[in-house]
Image 1 (cartoon, rainbow, N blue to C red):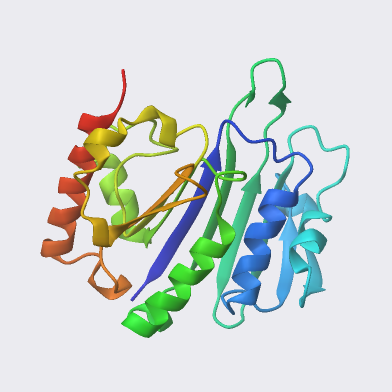
Image 2 (cartoon, rainbow, N blue to C red; image 1 turned 90 degrees about the horizontal axis):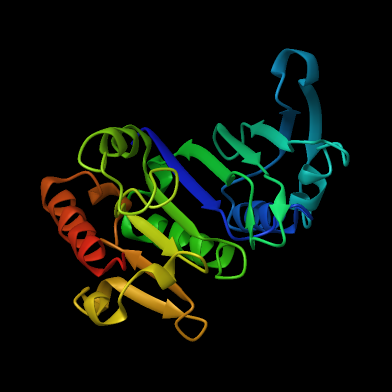
Length: 240
């Protein structure tokens, strides 16, 4: 399998203390998806690119500390080669307390080689990390899917997004909806989602949806048809 994309975003969470993206990185490291962080840069990659060697417990906070504290528009790209080549980017927007949302969008994108996660055992490890990373307190929407197909769906079948394309374009292999997003849907309609594919967490404040146990099956016609069917359930359930 080629590259896989893991993305998380939010309009309604304040990431400015950097603890949320640090926790995402820690979940990746604890699952073995991220080994040593070997390099980082800011918006201007040529001017800010530098080698680092960050690893072990608490690596997320140390990676996020590479962003200057007074950065007006915090952004970081990091990369490494273990256990296989990977990159991640974090973008943090200013939180407007009076509005309860950011002036823009918080984003987290992790891209990695999916070969080790195609089968059921590897997929289970990946899903456990996904569950560990995301909660209603940190994440509005998150998803994992093979990269090429993720991008093709966003500009194809999901061009008319369920909510917003940078957030919930449609159902992917693994999905999470948290505070700021899950409230936009009628629970009675969502009850039509297959129970074996959904998990409500934190008293119904968060929702995980996994379309198939194996990442390697995510781009098959049968699974894609199911993804599109589940997407239509969410479209019907969205409160206008």
